[in-house]
Length: 196
Image 1 (tube, helix red, strand yellow):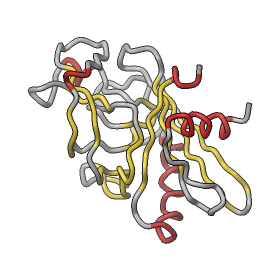
Image 2 (image 1 turned 180 degrees about the horizontal axis):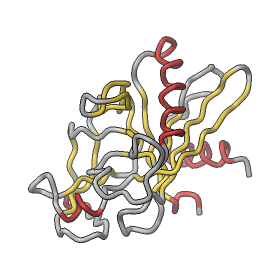
Image 3 (image 1 turned 90 degrees about the vertical axis):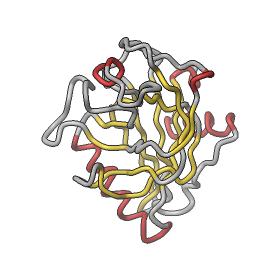
Image 4 (image 1 turned 30 degrees about the vertical axis):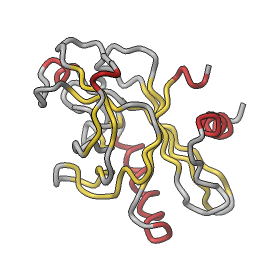
């Protein structure tokens, strides 16, 4: 099956907005969390879907939608480490600087997630721990030169690309979109189970 159609079908089933490909550079940013709830692997996928020059494009990218083992075992927040809840987040990000250092998608609207506070390397997503707010949950890259193989300290709850090359592509396309639709990007986090 066509991957773009498959993703769109899942969004339709959930009642999420699909940013129509009738308009050039109207970007859909999608994350798909792997069913393995052990941390520290770049075992999730991101997809940027858009239309340009009359053709539909999809850029797959390996990454993580989960915090790394280090931050699960050493939470920054006394309530526990943040794990984004699967949902659609309208206008979640804008282009800005991650930690003031380099261009990334930075948080621009509230996000919902779980707080995992038992300090092991298994992702615990218990409904009673849900929180919502501004926590600096960005989409950024890991290794600044090539790629990383373990998440470790690269994510404390952010959505993080494994490879610099694909992350740079996302930023380049987003820059082309800003003059047309403004500096605001929605994000939809799905799970592998949504496609079964």
